[in-house]
Length: 462
Ligand code: C2O
Ligand code: CU
Picture 1 (cartoon, rainbow, N blue to C red):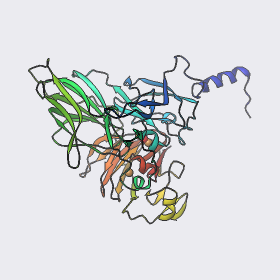
Picture 2: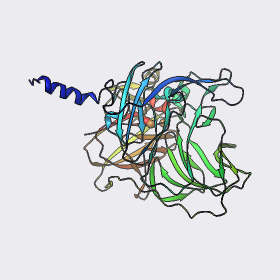
Picture 3: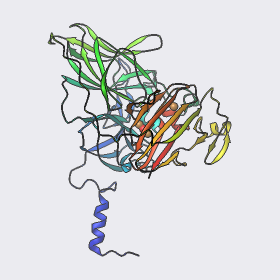
Picture 4: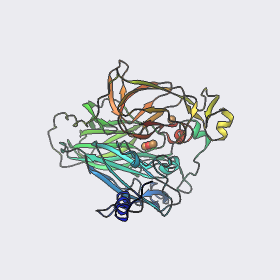
């Protein structure tokens, strides 16, 4: 038994104080991030306001912007009606700060607070969102952008952070449909909305000048929509995916897919003329819509710049495919799927019972969830190849917390680094990473209806 004298005890308690929810930040006053309900004009025209769940009274919440290697300190203050926590999506973070209710922390109850304090190692476009009952809390607006700036400024005129979302609104009441957990959404493509916005605005219109060079940071905050986007009156290059720079800018010639939680950083030159409107176009099934309009005003330049350079790479451990452990994950279930039973809480249950319990999907025949057995236990520094097979008829956007992975190309070469990868129906995707961040990390589908109904497990890195 260890006994502490009074001085040692005080030293110990103050060492722990910085980690506890109530004690706060020793040296600087906290910046609050307040989760609260707010009435927001989300619908266009004469419609009424919509009650959203917001950070600091708006959705998206406040943009958090920090230099690479800098520190983010935010006190999450819960002033709404459910427990919540904040996940910093795509950040290689200290596990204790990952913000997953029921795994890395308890949900912060109404009236309580929690201090997030972490370093951001990588430059790029990230976002933060609620990670308790995410299907509902994210759909009601609890998210915002987290931007980590490169050490050196880019050769651009300005940048725009563009957060895309879709909302399911009852047009009569202008309120969010309270149908979370509707079996049809859980078992099909997820909860799709009927109002599409950018930065909380329907038909967002911005101004631009001819030959102006913009950096556009696109974030998909929707529950389940795979945005298909193209450019009109803009000449563009993809320079980063999920915050991670591409080794060379990729000219945009075709439709870009932005799955839930994914990000695309673009450099675009405005090629439309004065008086014209350039667009980010959302390519729908039958029609194309303007996702974002850029009205071209006077004052541009005559000359265009040279093609952009690559962004400076972030510092990542190089994965060794030869030395890697292989894991496989079979994604099963959903409507028209072949799942007839799965193990839940260690017991095999027929599909009927799973559905009763709210589960429609499984990974490797198991519904593990947050508290279940981890999908894998890895040694710190282990090289991993993870082969995912989408044995369902719906697309899934698979996200790993805490570490970035490479998509492995068909020919075995390493593709771009990502944190969320889209598998179309029937598709197989191999990803590879170095398990260099210790802790318990979720691996789940970011179609949040799917995550809530079986497509969630975790990886433990020792
Ligand atoms: Cu955007 Cu579990 O995460
Ligand atoms: Cu899914």
